[in-house]
Picture 1 (cartoon, rainbow, N blue to C red):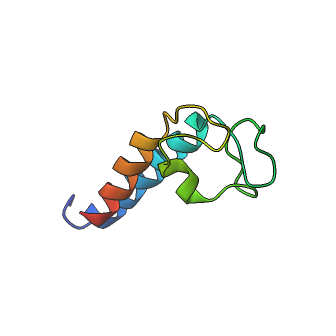
Picture 2: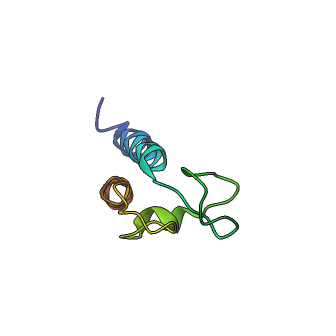
Picture 3: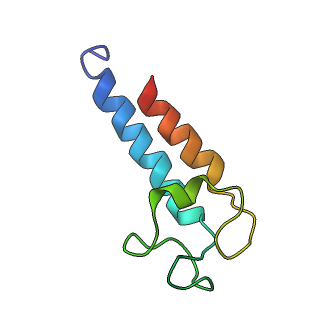
Length: 74
């Protein structure tokens, strides 16, 4: 049964990991470098993969985003 749903399971895991990354993103966007957090309307997904956030802070969401994308490539 797991084999039948393996693609769906990987997609769900990836979405969860990307969601975790968005919650951990420290902040900054192209419109406002001092904004706090990740806004789906003001940030790009690629912002999650930067070593430093746009506001200059260390980006703890990076590892979660990388694992989330790697999960979809399996």
